[in-house]
Amino acid sequence: MTEWQPIETAPKDGTAIRAKRVHDGRVICDGIAAWRTVHFGELRDPISGEQFAAPEDATGWMCPKGVADKRFPTPTHWMPLPEPPEVTAHSPDTYKTYICSYRFDDGTWSFEIKARSFEEARERVKAMVWATVDGASPAAD
Image (cartoon, rainbow, N blue to C red; front, side, top):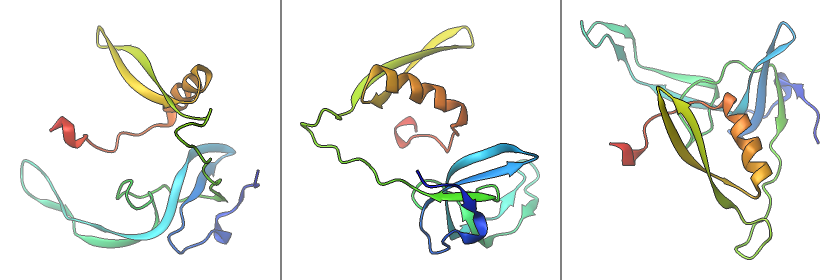
C-alpha cells in the first residue's frame, strides 16, 4: 500500500485522492477529495430573508465531482486511490445484498448493504461511523 504523503505533493488536476486531516496527532477527517472549483449560491436566513453568504466560486479541496458540492476540511496528507477490483457477473467476488438493522427513536429500522461476504458487510457497517448524509434520495421526494 502507498504511504501517506504531505498534501503539498497531491495532484491539483481534479484527480480524486484519499485525503486526511490530522490535528494534534489525531485523524479528524478521512475520505475522498479532489482539487476543484465549485460554485456556491447565496445563503439567506429562511425567516428574515437576510443574506448571510454571497454567491462565490471557491477553488480548493472538495468532495469529488458527482458526489457533493461541498468543501473537504483542509487535508494534511494524501495517498492515491487504489484501483477498483474487477468484478464480473460470474465472479466469486460478486456482491450480495445484506439486510442490516438498527434501533432509533423506539423503533427498529433496516437498510440494505452490498458486500461480498457477511464479514465484509459487518465491516462496512462498522465503517458507517465515518458516513455523512449528503441529501435526500430523489425517490424520497
